[in-house]
Image (cartoon, rainbow, N blue to C red; front, top):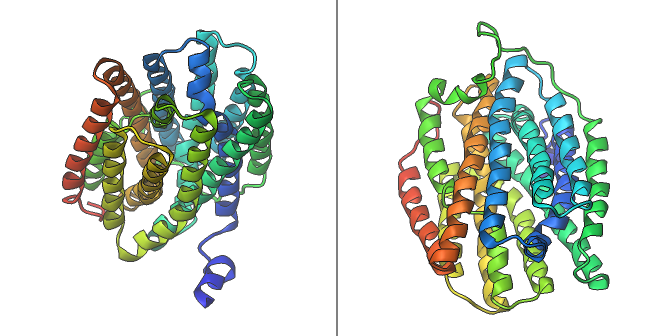
Length: 400
């Protein structure tokens, strides 16, 4: 009990003021985003998007975010500032939500999603660098796990509100885009409470140029390159969650079931991310990470088959274990194998390439679904994931 009290209130507390504020900002932002996310595939299909078009939309949006993550993460390292990127990034994402209420024209939908993803690209590397700077190497997974827990709690509340709304206004999607701006605005206000620790810009380097944000890979440590290489191969088969939700919908389940299962997934994820982060700090990040990837393999192998409500609920429970054991842990692992003043570049480059891989993953999975069927799309992902597990088992956890 005393260790828990110290963690929150003691002189060496792990969860600092900035960690709490950043986590709450993510909670409100995710509340806004996830209020829309589970019903987006159904809405897009209702306005004429095919499965391939949905995959392309999500992939392109993530690719835009990816380019921004790499570039803005390196820029924040270069000037030694994180806070402006965080504030403007969350602001853009909040403003993108009401855009979708005004038109369903393909170009406009792409523009709205792109605005949201530019905001994500702007903030991600700088925000994660701020989180990393708030703690030491022994507690990185705990901090990132706590952030993921609150972030994902927003993904529980958001769909819950959407479920209540759709109960009273079935299939009337557009007003939700306006309602989603409210928690987004709350996130913007919370960023005004953040205080950035003094830091120095990078010295002895050339002026920051357009391509500098994409050059980190060539100057990074070998440990970083090996770790990120494995993670990126995995990203190439980790398609958008929209396809998982569409799999449930096309198996004959209602919008209410789809959103209900998604809420369950996010609640399980929110409850598991923090304790699994603490576990990773205690027994080793690699062990928890590899276990998480095995849970992914199990989930995607399961989605190769159709099932009833309880079948899909079980699969999403396993999927929550995967997400909680990998997303925060991956960033914590990366931050421990690079110098402190390169954290923004390192995480930005990884998440940037990861987003570009998402374009390819969602695109090929959507195409495979249409040509070969969903069983092939999910089966291929599960198989490649197992190969990544074997590769990462040989990657070190120390800088080098």
